[in-house]
Length: 295
Image (cartoon, one colour):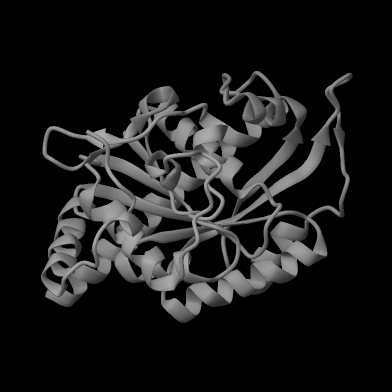
């Protein structure tokens, strides 16, 4: 049974909205870590990083969901080679699609009658759609929910901050100064909305030569680390630009290798180490604060 996108329904009543929001809270309680992947600008490879975070964490044995809230430009299904529309699950909700490594995936593209149909929505409709993704999707128990948002600090990350108060942001940048300037805006957005920041990831830190395997620095070095230091934000790691990753994204077949297989794989596994460690650290800090408050 296909599900219609929110815009195809009649306007919801206040009671319906409240019911969906309560259901969203119930479902979110079953998800341990909610990580919002965001960037200050486009073109930094944010969706690709979100995909590899999800697949890498799943390869490590975690149960993982991947939610694409980039409603105007959903890239996640194409990066993973997913097609088709969503259907009703056993509990009457929306059943996620299953990608590589058994990652559960939901994107607006699975609700559209045509893949290339534009989504022409204003802020309230986008907020409503994201709320439905959280309240009507049968995510089940997850260790991690990776949320890929569009570039910038607009409606979609605002809705995530509003609907998932315990979400944590992973901010993607490249070494270019223009990207670093925009990432500082993303950091200030998180601080303004009280969205906890997991850390910064520098993507495309270097180019992996397809002939010799050596690294070529196309931009200046160390920009992401310096920005993290200047802003008082943890630096999670760097990912090199690997042409095989680009080809895998075009084919809908991401490159998931053993940690020692390539420079990209070594960098990805080091990044996953940092993500897991940072999540544990913040969980321990939160538990300590709760214990102190109880006493």
